[in-house]
Image 1 (cartoon, helix red, strand yellow):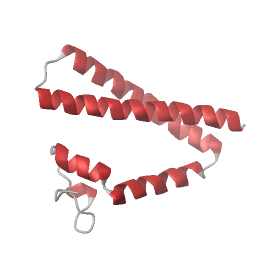
Image 2: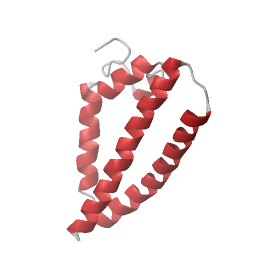
Image 3: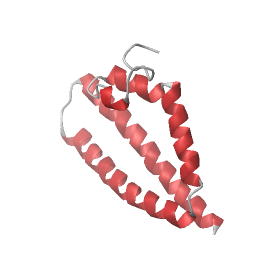
Length: 111
């Protein structure tokens, strides 16, 4: 990895969110991935009703963000680097929305 994120000497709050390389290093760092996996496992141990409530609330907000992002990408001009970053963000957010919808289906099937 690069030198813009080091979990041994930094916290997320130290991260420069305007630096796409730093954000990419944080997202792809093994420590970050392990933390996200731990959080996923802990969340799946919660009761189905609690999961459904939290996912539904988050899904509604993420779908609104996705609509806003789609509108911005279709109605505004961006420098190529900025457009690429926004398209990458859009793809990631779309993945989150899809995963949330699939988990809601799984929860329905478990009942």
